[in-house]
Length: 260
Image (tube, rainbow, N blue to C red):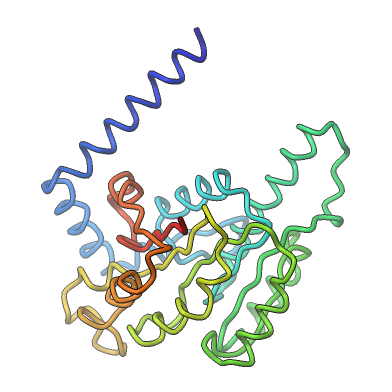
């Protein structure tokens, strides 16, 4: 009976998501919410385990679902800022360690975890580095300072990623088309089959042009345009449209790329 109920519930969820994806009205409402709430820096107002995280809650929930589904050993992130996203990823990996220990009947030794988060940023401010290194999740985090598209940094990350069996990548640094495309070319080969490369702030393409007067990116030059160009030449990746339909409110529409 329980199995039957689970199947029926999952079918209902799948149907709900499909209908959401077909609702232009809800898509317009969601986009307008993102535009209006951006005036108050909506995505800046949340934290994860004490560190500011510049994300909307829906995208945090999406990452949790994907981490549970793909069970990565390694998460690579470009863009660190205050470190909240690194802490989120590390805590999700720690939960995988916990569930693995429960299922195997073994005791849990957090310091012995082989799972890791790699963070890359062109400028890791000292106070942010110190806060991240003082956090209880810091034993699962390794940081590299430098441009994510610098060949030396890319090589260091590849060396640090060697030996990991399941890898998930999150891109959230400079949001210009050229930079994101270069990141995709550099880090997408590290994404393992069945896992994801998440490209954040693709929503820039859906925003009014005057929202980014002091930024080098905007409509027509942003992560979404980079994703669309990348997909044309990389059939091993596909946009997860079901995730877009489910979330509605997300800074990463068309940005959840699954490696087939």
